[in-house]
Image 1 (cartoon, rainbow, N blue to C red):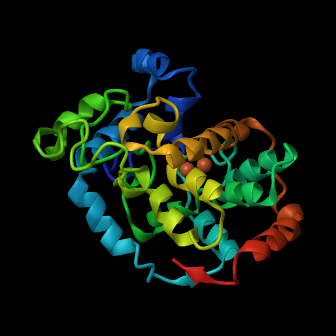
Image 2 (tube, rainbow, N blue to C red):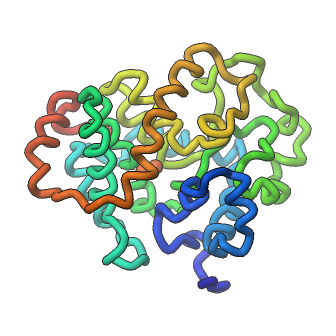
Length: 281
Ligand code: FE
Ligand code: FE
C-alpha cells in the first residue's frame, strides 16, 4: 500500500482518507492500530505537523482571506470542487458533491432547521484550495491551535518535533501568545478548508452553522476536549453544535449515494434562501 515515492504534497489516495483516524472508536484505539494505519496517512500527518507553523497560518490568511480569487455561486463552487479527482477507486468512493449531499440529506432526514441542512451541504467547499495547488496537508486533516503548545492528544503528535514552533519558547507554553479565556475566534488554528470556508460564508449563515464549518476538523477541541483554557462561554456553547454536526459528516458515508440530479431543485432553492447568486472566494 505504501509508496515512498508518492508526492509529499499529495500523500493521501483520497482527500477524506485522514478521517480514518476518527471512524475508529477512540483516538487511543486508532493509535494502537499501529500498522493498520496506511503509511499515506502517517506521511500526510508528518507533512502537516512539520509545516503548520504560526507564520505559515498567518501567511495563508493574508493570501486567501481578502477573498479576491473569484466570484462564484454556491452551486458553481460545488461543481468546481467536483472537478477534483481523487486517485481512489471511483466505484467505492463518493464524489465531493455526493459527500456534501449525503451529509445534508442525513441532517434533513433528522428534521433539523434549513440553515443546518445548508451548512451540511457547503461544509467542505473550502477544499477548493486543492484546485489552487495547495498541498493536501494545507487543506484537510485535523486542525489545532498554533502559537501555543501542541496537545499530545493531536493525532501523530510525535511529528510536532519537526515543527520549528515546537522549540520556540514563545509558542510552546500552554497559553503561548494567548491569554486564558481569549476565545477561539482570536486563536489561529492550523490552516485548511475549515478556516477558509468560514470566512467565505460568514455573512450568510448563523453563528452555529459557521462554527460547524470553522471547527469541524478541530478534533483536539470538539472530541478530545483539549484547549479548554483558550475558550470562552460562547465557544463552549458553539462546540455543542459542532459535536451535533460531526456524525453527519463522518458516518453518513456508508449509505447509498444521493441522487444529485433529483435533489438539485430542492438545494438550489435552499441556497437561494441564504446566499446571493455569487459570493467572493
Ligand atoms: Fe471537512
Ligand atoms: Fe466532510
